[in-house]
Length: 195
Image (cartoon, rainbow, N blue to C red; front, side):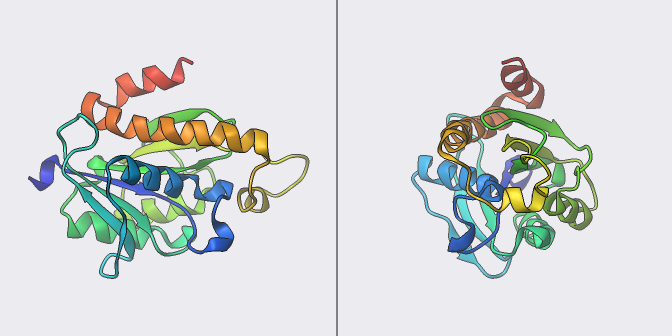
């Protein structure tokens, strides 16, 4: 049944100093999804990820593997590729959730393939998988103010107003995973992109 199973990956950085930062919203969304499915992510040293196997995402009836790499964001590719290979999941059935500067806080965009827009985690995933043909759920964190470098901005915790918007969009990102798996990418894009 491996061909019917999906790999859902949340990108972030390990360690308490990065918890709650903009850069960790992908990992936060996957942890939220695991909690919704009444399971916990457990460290898997073989694939360098925290992993949870789920019999069915939401009401889809489709099994999935939830994963959060235990490496730093810039080294996410190896663990994503290892998890895909270990669980025999092709890249076209991989969903990667990540922070996106080009999307405002509280918004969600989805796409398959495309560029990495300077996101080093995505760049490493592209390299390791040897393709960009995977689904991306882009969780908006907005642009840095003034001349603040993007890398400094994403490693900070957002102010309360942005945090509130991000918390809402994390719920929507978790919903979107089930919708992509159950209904397909285009109907899910139509739902979130037209708001």
